[in-house]
Image (cartoon, rainbow, N blue to C red; front, side):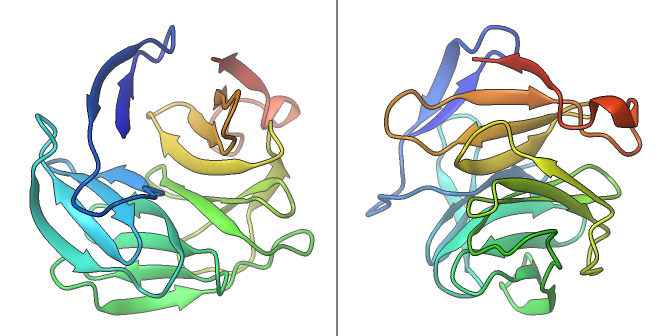
Amino acid sequence: MIYKINPSTGAIQDSIVGYGEDTALTGLSYDGTYLLSNCDPWIYFRELSGGAVVDSIPGPSTVNEGLAWDGSSIWSTNWSDNLVYELDPTNGDILSFFFPQAPADYDGLTGLAYDGFFLWISDQDSKTIMCCVPGDPIPWEFFLAPCDTPQDLAWDGTYLWVTEYESSGAMVYQLDPGPGALTPATWGFIKTEF
């Protein structure tokens, strides 16, 4: 399921069922018209109202995870090779890719969000969230995730949202993203959780 939730209370406002044989929806983004949902090996373009699939493109590899839209390209993280891919939204062709130089050993890039300048990337193994200029492997900044298993990320224009991957007691966190936002002393600080 894909859930629409109230950002103040966490209450579920709407939901969309998976598509076809989808059993593991991982990444989610919005391109201004369609909801982009990742279910390995496909990236689906879905209508917001009702969730009907209007198009799809192949993901870049296997075990694709997070998705982000930068206004012209789709970005995708990958659990198996730990690369961040830039994709052509019309056919899924790989336009570029990079291997983020994380602050610690990692093995499991999951979430991805774009804030208009940075790509925010989460890693489950090191439990970190890092931000990179798209294509630049050197993170601008990083901080520990608010949970042990950060799954996906979203950007609301001011704050970064983190979902937790747990079968029981999963949480959603609203964070001060740091660079370009509030003060360095509060980077990664939890603003809301539900």
